[in-house]
Length: 410
Image 1 (spheres, one colour):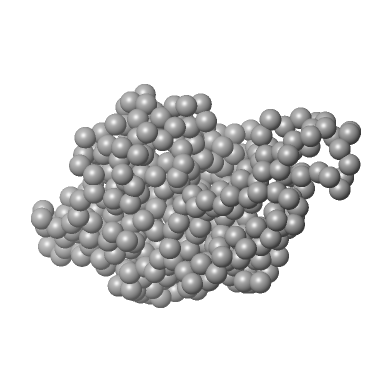
Image 2 (cartoon, one colour):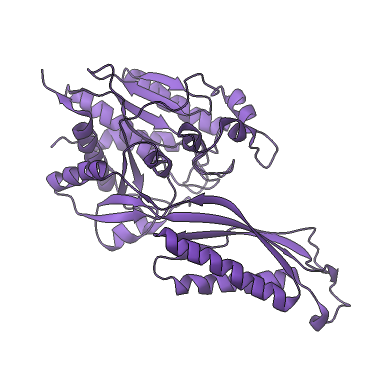
């Protein structure tokens, strides 16, 4: 079995981490920012040095291509993203991109040519930290999201995706979509399961269902010093009860049911005014679509009951839905065969996070490879991985991709 150059890959990861480096050891490269552009340019420099051909599509997805001997074959694609959270880590996303580059560098080292072309994809705005929704670039690529809608999306400063693409120079001309033979994405787990089980590789069988809801709670703003407690219609106290109900709901669907309230905003808030209007977000996750349907039904029923009891109104609207997504059996088998032959500690696992691979799985045969992250910590400046796990995960990626792409023997 082939192996990659772990020291070279680690050096590349550390060099990329210097772009947008934060004071506490993390990374900040918001999508289509100056830092994201600098990261893309460094990656492009490395790709050109490796003899790869670069192209960019209309939503800013960046592709680096290594030709195969079969010029008519669709490419086997690897990739992930270079954008980060505002206070993100050094490995989320970037590992999958640079692992793909290391696969190609290692094939060059060994003088190996593939029958099918290979491509590395850098997807635009995977994190969703600057522009919503997350995984925007891969959604447009796969036809899940219309290009014009994506281009019109604006950040909190009113800057649209279209404007950011023009500013960074990533409003490319490559046609959207196109045939893809298969897609493989290496990624840190972003959770504690592999580390807790002392396994170096997660063979990912699919992604869990995700559902985002927006909740609007309306009561009556009033003076904090003159309104008796029994006569108040306090939107925040009502929302507090609702949020507690959401935590209780997760326990009813344990262990796979997850609920999160990640954002809460009070309209026209003031220290001495009873909150009359607020909004908060709900993130629901479960491995099965039927269960997440049941979770949403319970969210609606329980929050409405609390609102009725407290004299409030509540409106719940869907924001984003991602169904449970099984990965392609043949691609998963390529990953499984590689890790078995390499003899690395492993387990099958379902992805708890959203990834570009989820969109790609509905477009072409897809699989993922997970490696552990220290303490299961991600979306945090303290995010960390072990160099041996980085190397082993990329060894698996190399051999899985080579099996799919076909080795040419001269």
